[in-house]
Image (cartoon, rainbow, N blue to C red; front, side, top):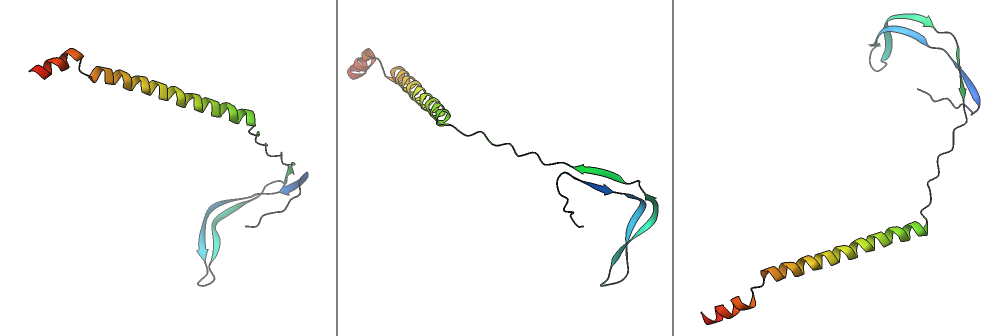
Length: 110
């Protein structure tokens, strides 16, 4: 198969030949060829396709320093909030696990 080099803003005329059947290998080694087993119906009328100019690829929006600073600020805020919440959680957990003063005094005397 060969690609055609068609300039933009040009046009291409083409026809299609309709075939019904299947392809079978014909000939012998090393010169195999493909042959249609079936029939051809004929060529279509000539069709014309215009080749438009390609549209330019969209340019990605640049990442501005303000956007980077905003995202960095949100990340730092989330980390600080997480650290504060974890410290509160562990302080409360330690309070619940410590024996009360009166329980400690009683265990000394028993």
